Image 1 (cartoon, rainbow over the protein chains, first blue to last red):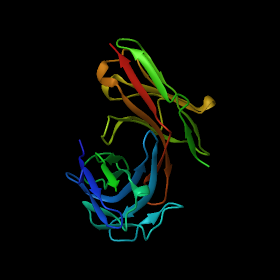
Image 2 (tube, rainbow over the protein chains, first blue to last red; image 1 turned 30 degrees about the vertical axis):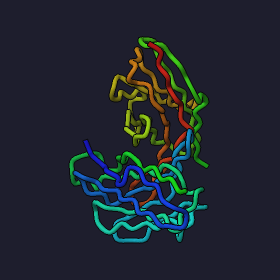
Image 3 (spheres, rainbow over the protein chains, first blue to last red; image 1 turned 90 degrees about the vertical axis):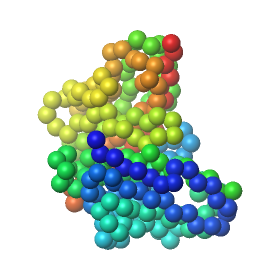
Length: 120
Length: 116
């Protein structure tokens, strides 16, 4: 099946630093990638939708200057948490939508394994 | 507004017993419905989905779900649970946006524990 990877899987950083998380579609091209945030024992909340070659669309209440998203190619999107604070600690999950060239159903989202961010 | 409700936060069943996880949705049109499973510290794996057609949908790992429009429900079932099914289960409704992709709205999840 379609594989989406995230790197790093776990990161610990000091307050005030910036952290970059990568999301890659390994065996298919993804014109659209999604970034979610999951709080402990909570559901996934969509943060933003990232389209290749264009600006990301952020959900209401998500600070675009805080969570910078770049989707520079059909297989890579990055989320940068700028000036991280302890309240940014969370589990961040990306998903990628198949472009449709691989034979799989167009529109299905495939999820990465997630990145655990801890800000001290 | 679209929403998904999973009434059961935590369910415990014995191995070999049957399972039903409840999901109710609120959506103005015919919904795209999904069930995902998440193992601890992992991403989400799609179990099954409903777009149209037969209201009883078969998925992976022996799971099935039934779409009932009159009840706005999409309950997940498995006739015999295995210890490896212990995980968090999420129901989601897909909101079709321009561009042809689904914005997923997730329920709060149901944590399944399986007793030997």
